[in-house]
Image (cartoon, helix red, strand yellow):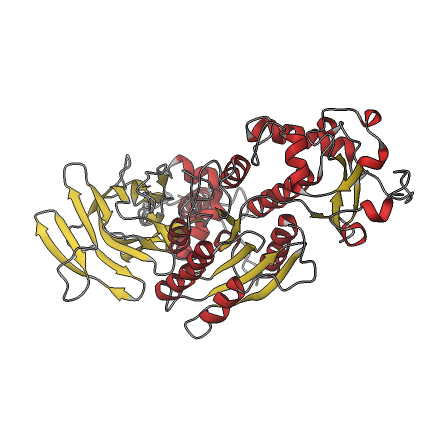
Length: 572
């Protein structure tokens, strides 16, 4: 009788045959972004198993990051040169130094630099970072905006240039692409689908700076047409002396942004290169206050509550590109600098998922898969018909190309350290009663030097019924990650590798021996028989009996049937 476990039946005969030919199973947890939002991340990891002594001993390997993960990374700095101070620039340059020091020997790290004022401008194309060229990247970050639109702030276009740069590199996986925005969060220009930089102009009057009156109550000669941020502050948040978040919180403000943009479309969007910061002298007759440019449009004084002003639309567009970057799977970080206003703090924190970030945290997120204190718990594989046992003393650990030395600390505890160093970098403790171990990292696990843990398991109990099996080497293996700030993340399970195992059916039974045929009694009289030259068989009614021939045919048929049944059993 053929016997398989249910999961094998479901996979079908073809999958079983493939598994048997492979001889080893590989299960990869596809890498995804680490720390994409505060408090949540997914660690690239893999787990494999293969027989080292067929049907007796298997070798299991866990790796962080995954054994199939590419170690290259792309990092694009997007720098707001309208507000960045020396501290932010120095921190950005220090991050480059740390990257160079930490990733030596990795596949490669590529860095690009985009700055923005009136538009985004690529200061340094995405290219490999190393000790020989790190100063060139520092210069690109510190050198400021070198484009043509030196007035205004267009965060959206800076982010869009970074996205185009990352999108173009198809060699690096999305989860290893990073955008670092350095800004005060105050933006007022955006780039439309036609590629032109746009501003939105508001009908402002110094006689009513907080826009409490209707336009009809003000002499047209007293209006000016600005697309700048200070007029937005006075009209949008009249009770605030600094830049405040309209409506008090991001969610409420953003809900209004969505409504305003949907209603206005590009009705009030005009080319910034044509009208500049102040369109008054271009579009207004100073003698009468009448608008002389028929193509010019503006938001009427006192109606700001119903429309997206320039900073509103600019924030909406920048946030849209930010979400698109994250949607591609890129890691996005926002470093606030230059302004401590309520709006700046709340908007930049929103980009980070609700909390602030600094360059130290960002560098750690890029460099490390998880922090010191992260653990792996792993229970050996058990099933109804099989039992894998951990083999103490077989565990080995490597970090990148470095093989660590193992020291037995007690009966079921080991530490792993660099050659000649007493400092434990990793520890493993085995619980014999539970047939499980705990592996603990005493240092951060680098994204550029994978940690590999290998150990053996013995098949202490094996299936006995004929059939093809898949034996799980482990019941469950779980990563308990801690980030560089010591924050415990959600538990993440490794996939469980399975090994093919076959119990063959018994050998074919021997064909039963034929019983001696009974001899016919000698006739008392001999009848003459005519035989042709070709030797014809006796006809019915001839003295020779036909029974022996029938019996022989039946026995042969039975033997053939038995053999065929055995072959079918073995085939399946």
